[in-house]
Amino acid sequence: MKAALVFAGSGPIVILTSYPSLSDPGLLRALKAHGVGKFIAYELPLDTVAARYGGHFQVVMNDARDSDDLRVLDVNGDRAFRLFRFSELGPPVMHDDEHPDRAESAA
Image 1 (tube, rainbow, N blue to C red):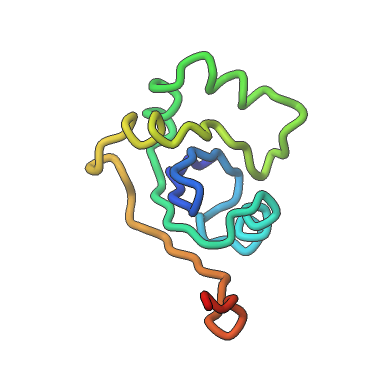
Image 2 (tube, rainbow, N blue to C red):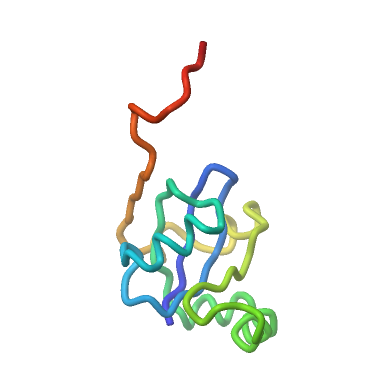
């Protein structure tokens, strides 16, 4: 499993995923299905995430209703952002599925 802090249009979230990388096409499809098509993500040390979230981490890991491929651990952007130091973040992974020719006019 991997953990990541994902910055999207609605704010930061923390996810858990079994995909091998944060740029894996399967993860990109799963995030898009959850409304996250454009983001900057940073991998987090899994043991650090488990320690910071405590019992909630185990509840999410054991939730049979969630997919093994993508589990959302935290949607409270303020808390997610405050729980981790910048020095704990891995290198950024950026994804943008929006194209200028498909963007709606701001007129």
